[in-house]
Length: 377
Image 1 (cartoon, rainbow, N blue to C red):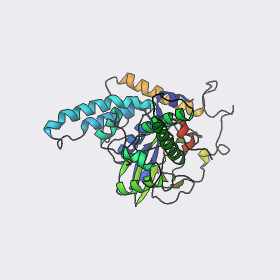
Image 2 (image 1 turned 90 degrees about the vertical axis):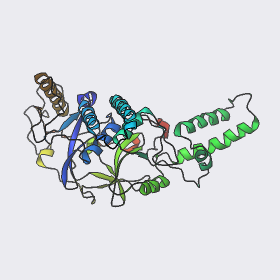
Image 3 (image 1 turned 135 degrees about the vertical axis):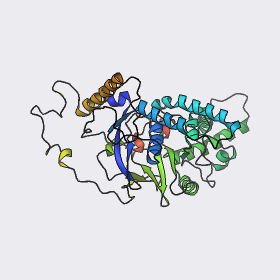
Image 4 (image 1 turned 60 degrees about the horizontal axis):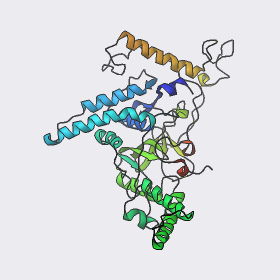
């Protein structure tokens, strides 16, 4: 694993949004995708700022940028009697953000796209006024709908029902349970299991319909699916996910992924929301056309044992450390308006970033168990 992943170092990619060049943060394999999705919304809406000369950003810098924005938000519209509660929520949100380095557990409800079980982690979205949504909605016409919607059951509650169901199938049950209870557990459990199996992609057509209905053009939100958090935008009556996989670093024309199907091939578009056309590889991106050191290495110092990407990330981290030693009272993320960035060594990024993640490889770092991951094709 590259040192940048271990140390919380993330690449920036410049895109065009509404005619302006904006940096977005790309997702490492083990990166804190809830915080990255939030940060990208704040960058695209110009609520936080990263100097255009930066090619990378650290986890600590993201926390600092969002924290500074939270503390600077206008509180004039908050009623005096509610300000104390608001300040308490802000303090709790600031304490929660560092925990996002290891992900975020959420518990969806299947009735509405904005419904999740409330936890302290959700405060981050509330105080930033960013909506957290999902598309795992059950159609009221489905057989399991009466069971799930009647009690507005959450995912965790469905799992509890499934445990009862499989225990009953195995003959392991409370001896005091009545036969009618066992029949109910078996009947409802089969319906619940069928729903979870048929919606294993964690997105349904009913969910897509509700997302279109609830969101207005120009709305940003954080979208949860397959244990992953993405930046979602509604634009011209279409839904788009910001393409933040590190594998897209050197594809300037690949910016958004259209969210129009619950499964199947992805449709990518450029910054103008027109169909994506792969860019032609430049000479600097072509290993055969680019000059190489005599020893055949990728540019890392001879004998270092590091790849070019690892060496660049190590140099970047060292530069940040040296900068903080020279200016101990100055935050590395605070750049005066119109001023120069802190003295950080900037490098050309790695030639071969890892391949983009798919829903199948998203993992289960951020919430739901593996057995509900979508089946591999």
